[in-house]
Image (cartoon, rainbow, N blue to C red):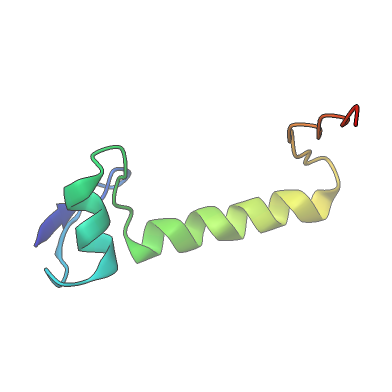
Length: 66
């Protein structure tokens, strides 16, 4: 299966029987990102987290009345 990275527009071939190919076929909301781009984003995110100025905006758990 030919896929295109959403960030760098590099075209790659992945195995038709792989889990990523199945996700891309069955769920159009899933997008493909090449290994280089995903590593670059992970490195930059980890560097931002190390500065201490990075915040996770996660939903707070609802208090259960029961």
